[in-house]
Length: 576
Image (tube, rainbow, N blue to C red; front, side, top):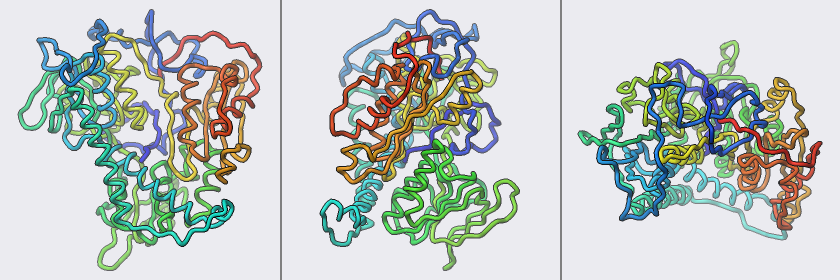
């Protein structure tokens, strides 16, 4: 299941509960102190997107702390093969050891072998991590089923296409098996890909013993020139909620689809909750959302949230309670239903009590960083997250960089998405092989795989307007509808909107948000434009095949009104 997007780096108490990402404040961007560097590769964003004209370039090979050892090394590029997994320095067992074999660790391992590094990956559970085994992959299998069911149940849609279909049904176990089989297949693919390239897969829980030294299993110890922590996350369960894994469940349990409740409450209306509401309602359940904030889907652009409520919530068997906390949830037992006690989110006064067949806790995810041995290197977590700088280098309790230690993915809290973890891992490998590389997180897209889908990249409209007010530039909005797209109309799927947030003075793309058919696929043209610093006045001349859904984005860029038709030169970027 796609996790909620987070770019919060703000320090917090290590004892505080991890903040669900849908609850993050709008001022979620934190820019690290500037560093000077003569030459830097940014994958990324031009400075104007964020407007930090006074900042100098960042660098990953130079530190604010003079005692931190530079990671400069000559680049090495070797062809990867199972017989040649690099050769480590005589001083170390490996060039690189990765703790955690999820999507992030897998991406880092493959890139490391490609760069000629002798690489090992440590996994205490199963290869694939959350995404493959308990998240992105099995959830997409369930959503594929829900999408087919919706098509077969929509008589109006079918008649419009001239189709006649008997009543649709499903086999619960068959659906569950489809999700499990897909996870198994992808897990095996990941394992085989690493084995074929010669990555050593070390089984056991990884613990950092000290600088450049890791223990795995009971007594196995390896040394490495560089170490990457990629231990991922687990479902976050607020206090007062009793999870029994049967009637009160997390996304880990829900993906097994052991039963379909007649009525299920979903606590949290972010990505996870919204996707599961799509699955459960398609399979016949009634859904009740419990949301702490005053509106559903608080992490989305407000205009997209409003449209999503009209398309994904109101027509379905879904009701909701907003502005309330689920202060206590008791599992069903002795013939009694699940009980949910609701209190006002502001006053904490009792509001209502729900009795349902099941409750899904979808309040976000918490970093899995316990037992890593961080105390051995003087690292203190912040709300469970491992503090890192813009180059994913771990920062200790005194604010010093820990030499040769990096953290990627959900464990650092920069952006809790599987593909972000992989990109961070690749960025780290570039650094340790002598190449300057800073990943720009505002160019990384996110998607919610409902029917229709939602996708986004960059800033929301409120974030962009707040930034514009502070920095003195104008923001404009352009929109296109799927109702004007030939391919969408041919599919009888004209419900949808694409929204562009941009600067009319220089054509900078600040954000793009889409709700509609295959929105998750369409967003990448916009995300790549942001990453490459492409301006609207350039990209609007791109040619798109007709008739395709991609013309929604084509028309979006063409409808933007930019003051200057001349591209301005790229200016210095900023790391996020």
